[in-house]
Image 1: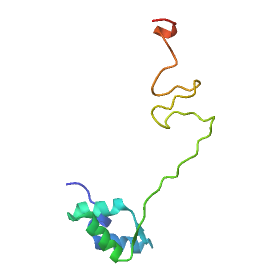
Image 2: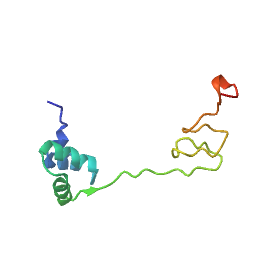
Image 3: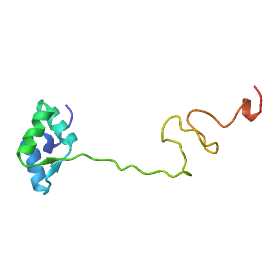
Image 4: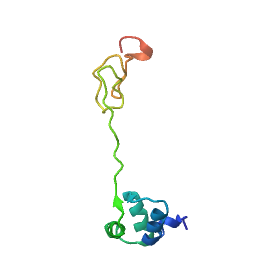
Length: 102
């Protein structure tokens, strides 16, 4: 059997864990772990946690603004507008071993 962290055993244990650490929030992943361990629907677990006064928060990822001189790799699959950077869709070398022709 897999190891279950004590704070995710049931809702009451998680609430006690949060109050001991002076936390007033939980993340959806916490509710998902409790729901899996108690074999209850996640919405039901979240409603019970909110009933204890805890708030659900989401972990938003801050997006970075890219400048016009930044490397386009990794922005989106077909970004190859700049010839100085290699893109995922093609190669800068043409022909066999860098020789021109086919």
